[in-house]
Image (cartoon, rainbow, N blue to C red; front, side):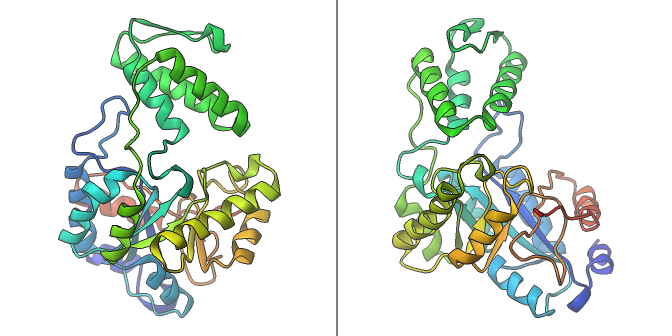
Length: 318
């Protein structure tokens, strides 16, 4: 199967850089989220990637992309947000396969913080009874007797809240968690020590703002501070430069705009990644590099999906 990626991603000027994106790696699949995302799946992906592709640290891959020296079948591995399981579960798998990943960490939610969407997830997980009555929060009522019903309400709430103004969204999240009155986990995100551990083990640390806002939905001055201060906070933790950035949520023209790309350059990052699909080639904007999430566990299907992604037209902010 190695020949197929080689044909479509030769070395040099015509090379393509595929950047894969993960968020969490769990010991067991999370049935509520309806995702594999477990250690067995991640191990299978690493086995396929290291057998069939040239796995490179992202910073090195970007440097080689700029100089037209990328090897054939180039791939880099990234993680977003800064979940504790990245250090606890994913790191040993990466070391097993001698692979270096880049971890884009939201600096303000480590050390006991929690992403707003995780508060929603854990609240729905721990909600008691067959009906979730959110009428006092102007969100209606939802059946939650079955797993499928809980999954539906979870998707509904996250979609309704994702693009809500940040303060209004946080107010709702706080009220929801108070209404559920369950003890929610405060160890989902990394500690500073775990960020340092990743860095010591040769992994790359990238910035992902302070609080993971949708940049396009906040004032430019606030966005600039989120980007710049998130970088500084991580640099203080690892005592080293943080040169790579990932746009929160990452959809061009919806989640971030061209103004934010200019901010990232001005603040001093070397490159940045989005969540637009595609594979980067020479001449692409290194401050809007695309990424892709393959999910197949069958080696052949995985490789074919990676190849297909190489030919996606890359969307960028303009």
